[in-house]
Image 1 (cartoon, one colour):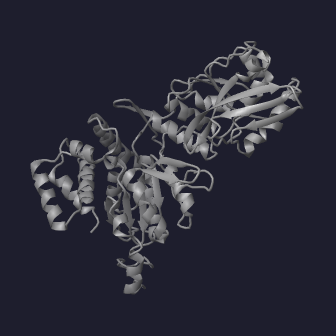
Image 2 (cartoon, helix red, strand yellow):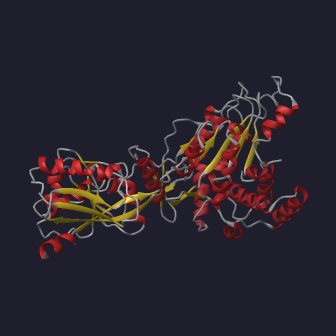
Image 3 (spheres, one colour):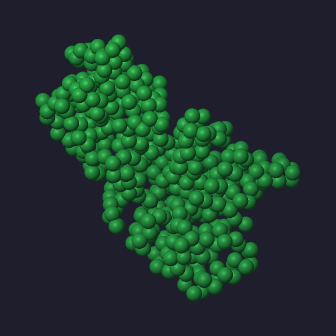
Length: 508
């Protein structure tokens, strides 16, 4: 009985995802006399239950005898639903090393097992490790080689790579020495302010390709430099989508935490993280479902486009064609920069600090303000089309531009490289002031602290607020947009000319 009790206490650590947050899982196993059986308890999903067959085959083909005992594997805490195939390796290690005095110490183990004992990657491993590292819960991890190369980039975490179950067993037996995987350097350029920030200077699409449209490009520059929400309206083919799609490459540089978070979101989507310092651009179609935009699921909450766009751009092309329920639900993530998904089994909060960009036509046919084409819409059609965007939704947008018709004679005046340089300078000014967030995402207290006006500009703001009947939210947005314009103009305090430009870009 004493021997069985000692084995019952042997455990190894792994983790599961609850939304985008990793939860630590203690895996322990008991081996008792009785009819041979193998069971896994603790609210495991189907992928974990199927681990019984993978683990048994991997042990047998790796040269180990599967014990003819009643084996019970417990996943604790037992009231938390667990998912993923990354628990194959720790379960197999517990069974293979049942008779040995092995101390798994502070290791976390992740890995899916092939039937031949090969340790394979799982899309969730990098996201799990990054989340645990953010919580300060992980120092060392044993996993497959592909995942170890990614994990090695996380500061403060040592990744030990194994290719087979036999290598993992030998490592814990001290029969095989494995050095931590060396971290690869990031290829991006570095901007040093209060800490290193990473950015790329390779532009697949260039702003110089956008002919004319100086006002729209200026608004795009302001939006990119301060992370302000932007809405472009204009006739079909005038360059709305061209401008917004080029904005992703001139956005501010990324901190190490932001770069790793982006890689984590890529891995959760099933992509191989490239660790490029390029902020995401998500552009869902207007037929996308509410669940795909905001996340959801009947049993567990999964991320939608609003969470995947965190730190980048969420672009809604043909904005009025999105269902009104989706547009109205966008008000919370746009205002609070976070989204709560509530289900019976889970409540998950996702960060949604993205730059919202929208593009629309001024009327259903798109020619309402065209100088060369006639509008085919009647007054009721135009009113119905424009009423799809409510005032509370539009109040969350900082910059509005009515674009002119495209001019084939116009030329591109500024390149993406030139605009990126202006963004970098404005970004450096924001960080030198001690801001944690970019201007467009400042809260009310931070706005009062950092958005300092010259006396003449302050008087103009008070006058404009009374004249145009501006709400408190509209005044706050004006202050933040003016702050970004002043940063682009290399001014410490906001001047009257900065405020006037911000007023010219507000919704009328």
